[in-house]
Image (cartoon, rainbow, N blue to C red; front, side, top):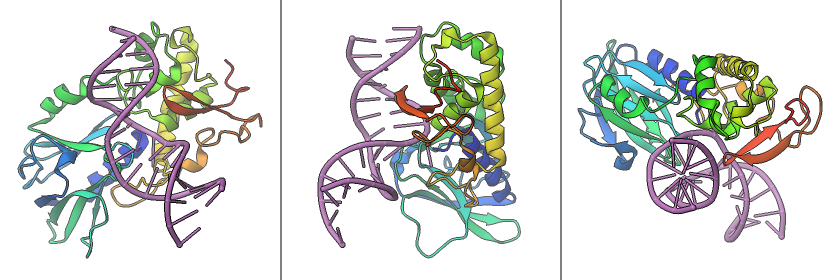
Length: 275
DNA sequence: CACCACCCCTGGACGC
DNA sequence: TGCGTCCAGGGGTGGT
C-alpha cells in the first residue's frame, strides 16, 4: 500500500488538483467502502475550499465549512482527480463530480480493488481525531527518538513488528520498515527492549531520512500506486533490501536473507545488520 | 495488557 | 491457452 510517502504524495497532489474546486454531486457504487452515512452532504457534496490533513497512512479532506471525509487506502486504494471519460475504470467505488471556478469540470474517484481501504465521514476534524487518530502513535515523519524509546523499552517484540504497529508510530509499512532497519544497521528480529538509546536514535534518524527521500521521489510504485494526478513513484528504484531477498547486498554483496517477521516478509543483510 | 494467528479481497506471476 | 497455487504495500478482531 501506500505507506506514509505515497499518502503524503497523494495529499500534495490532491491539494493542487482541488484548488478552486467545488463538489457538485457524488455517486456511490459500493456503499460498503463508506463507513457510516452515505448521505450526499456527509460525502462533501457542496464542499469548496477543500484542505488536506494527514496522520500516518490516513488522510482527510476538510471542506471549507468543516465537514470531513477520511480516507484510508489499504493496500490498493487510491484517490484521483481526472477528466471524465466515457467508461469508468473498474473498482471505482465512489465518484464525485467537480466544477472549478474557471468553469472546467472533472471527477474525483476512490478506487480500491482489494477493498482493504475505505472512507469515513465526520462532522469535523476534532471528531475525526478523537475517533481515529488519537489511538495512533506519533507521525513517523516527525517522531522524536525519546517518544519511540518510551514505547519500545518494555517490549519484547521484534523491532520490525514494532515499526509496523501504528499505535507505536503512524505511517510505516513493510517497505520502509525494512529499508530503515537496513540503513540503521539493525537486525529486524532484535527485541525492542534490547536496543540501545544510540540504536533508537539511529533508527529514528534513518526512518525520517528514508521517508523524506521517498516523498521527494514520488513514493514507491510496485504495481498499482499512483498519486491523485496519475503520477507513479520512482523510489522503488532506490530500495536497498525490500523485494531483493536472495540478491547481493548493495553494500557488502552478502546474499540478503528473507523470513516472516511480524507476519510480513522481511528482508535483511546478515552482515550489515548484525543480530 | 501484550502478543499472535487469522481473515477480509482481487489480481498478477509462475508452474504444469 | 487454461487452470491451480502462491503471493502482495494493511489492519481489525478475537484468542491465548
